[in-house]
Length: 239
Image (cartoon, rainbow, N blue to C red):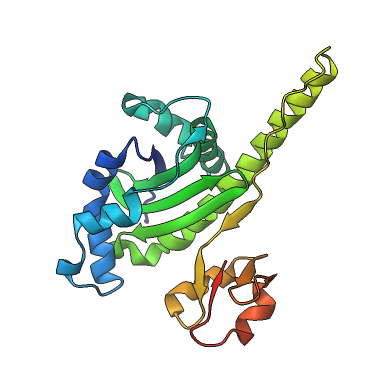
């Protein structure tokens, strides 16, 4: 009979975990780039990986706690692996605890690093920077799994922000203070990055609904379901 292995998510913030990210993820990144995208091994260097996915202009802010290397045991427990809802909320708790910034979320099947999702956590939502996965596990559709987990994390982050705002409003109404605490911005959006209609490997982005594309010519957001058929070959848009 088929066996199942729990999916475990480890969240690593940048720049604090930069050395660990490069050490633990480069081999997987190289395998993905060479086997999935057909790049030559000499084209995929550790220095290029660091420039592409480790160096970040975003500074972490708004967190309620600092990340600790020795806090991984608690981190794994918070991320959870019992079911999709618990895991998504656990991963979101970790992001909320650490604040806005750039993160690598490592997806483990048992002890095997199966995929990595690189995300920017912003006040208005979560932006997917890149995702790479083990080519030997292609049949698991891990790119879609990561996207769905990230979408679920946005929903969980929004729910937590709404709960925080309710508490602040309740506290302010019962306080004599004339300057109530500012409300937390509620993150409601998931940004999937560039969409190139002529690239088959990017078309999966239009499969998630409801979704919109931002035209790079007009700047308007239009429903992906209504626009993808009319997007000219080679056109780019933000999803």
